[in-house]
Length: 194
Image 1: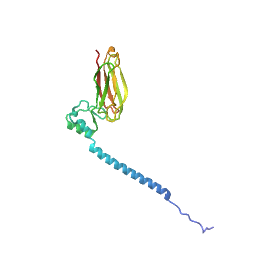
Image 2: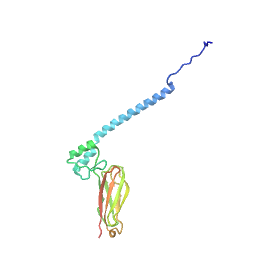
Image 3: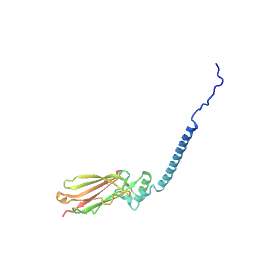
Image 4: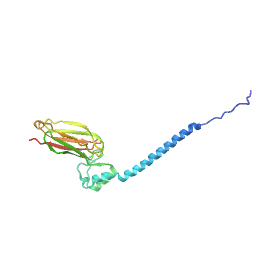
């Protein structure tokens, strides 16, 4: 038996317009996003290239290349024979840091505050500050320490020798600051016992 009045429906192959348009928009937005990301990367890369070694150059200038405490970005010691060698290293190997830690004052009496002043560390880096007693029973305490956005310590960080420290034989404390990348510096604060 024949059916002659069959209705032929249209067959769709692939996606309908309702599905194609949102997918096309997603692809266009993705392509636009990638294009913007690449453009931003290129601009920031040019800015980095233009000023990327200026911090290193400053560390190397004015005799800084001869500092005994120069370190790479992970705290490994560096030594250079000239300013040019120092700057060239910074251009090809990355950051050169010259961290310092000092006590102010460096000689104190019991109950007197010695403020710790740091510079040249990675900025905003969580690390540690260790206080090691010299003389007496010795001993150490290590505390968490966060460097400031300029690579130093917040104002007011310091230490006080408690009353009776001289009687126990303590004569100084060595402080070591290590940032989260391993860059480090130490200083000693002396206790004057009369």
